[in-house]
Amino acid sequence: MEQKAPRRTREKILELSLRLFNEFGEPNITTTIIADEMKISPGNLYYHFRNKDDIVNSIFVTFEEAMSRMLAVPQEVRPTMQDVWRYLHLMFELIWRYRFFYRDLSDLLSRNRTLELHFKEIFGHKIKVVKQLCQGLQADNALAVNAVEIDALSTNMVVTASYWLSYQYVLNPRQYTEQAVVENALASGCYQVLSLMHPYLRGQTLVHFEELTAQYLNKNGTTSADNAISSIQ
Image 1 (cartoon, rainbow, N blue to C red):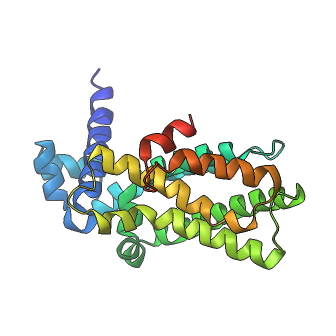
Image 2 (image 1 turned 135 degrees about the horizontal axis):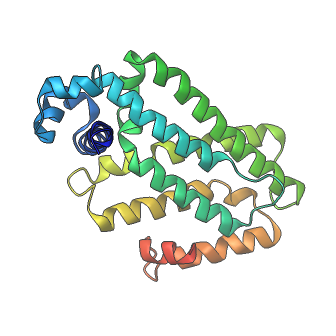
């Protein structure tokens, strides 16, 4: 039990730090604040982490591992539009859990070389996965695009997905963490990303997308998170 206690303290520090970074922004949180919230001395905190960047990097390791698993899409199976919608929703949930990385990204990259290098790789991997998806749809004559359009479409989809929640924060900064607002932000993000493909879709894939869209939009033409979520489950 004595051997497990330090590790548990370390885990609690990481969990608390992630919550504080997400709620208040990483630049606004110091190691002193974290220690106070943990009700431990700064010395005890520094026993586990050298400084705040050490905490950030440790959280990033967990995020990067989760993102790598998410981006490891099986290539032998061609996903349906519903599979893509579900996949995007899971991706948005992961981004939401570690949202401070995206909201404070410019500041973090300006002073953290590790994040600078690894985030570039993550974005590159995202674009590669989306490009493979587009090429698969193109091969099935479900997406009418050329190579240049695939490059632009893949980049636009990744940029929209990566910064959609930051955009939602601008729209609803005071209600940003309310459950209904969060659910709508995740669901609307899936719709916005896939809508970029809409002009290029053909055949049954287009029909399937429009069916999912119809489930997502309510009778008044406004977005409905409940409909969108139910359509992907």
